Image: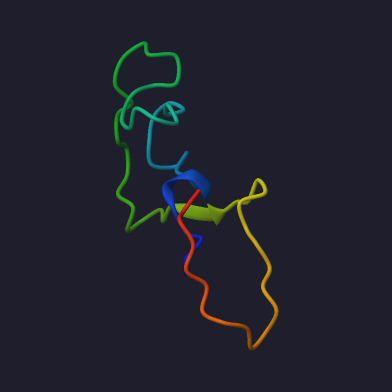
Length: 72
């Protein structure tokens, strides 16, 4: 999948930590009050990943030429 990149993926991992985590500083609390402690493994409570799109995707006609574009 060409569109699965860091800027259009979200993870819902609230069951793995004791507090809400910061979106860019993994293992830090959202308010930077300290580290967010892991309370369970991702095997027992799997993380849900969401593919989001804020206008990054493009639609191409079927059977067209190969799509070689620079990533946005």
